[in-house]
Length: 233
Image (tube, rainbow, N blue to C red; front, side):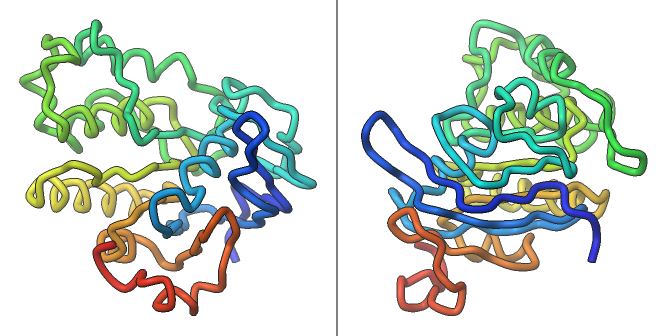
């Protein structure tokens, strides 16, 4: 088995007094793509945001590249290799596409030898629709272009693991197909991916295994059909 880039034991997440995730354990290996499935409100977004250090959480173990990251703030986790593409994309609408991309460079940190590295020219080749839009404001992009920009910006931080939250939400089928092709290319480069999705067919076309969240708890993936997770949710 390849090395672990992310190892978590007994992770719980809170929003104020409300608990959203209950004792989740998971492991992501180098070059592996894992789907995180579940309905709206299952806790997928809360889990990814906690892993990235964006919300209050506690765990008995949270290792990034074998280092104890439980007390690390979000920026240190990003520099250690965790890049989150959130559900709302969070691009800077008052910056140009090129300026947004340059923001990804600020999160770069040291990377283990052999992990994929991405430069501006490479991400623009991967998401070629952004090339003629480099001088446009983020607010002028379509939903699909904003999603491409959010992923491209994350890649420029040289992540070892890409955490993606509902990347197909609101996108046209053709854009989803293009996104699937781009993400498959990233897998072949050896990037690790943890992908939260409701669109199961999209997720499983990219991922080698799946984890199922239900009401904030991990279920055995064999129970997916009991939850109706057997296609487009």
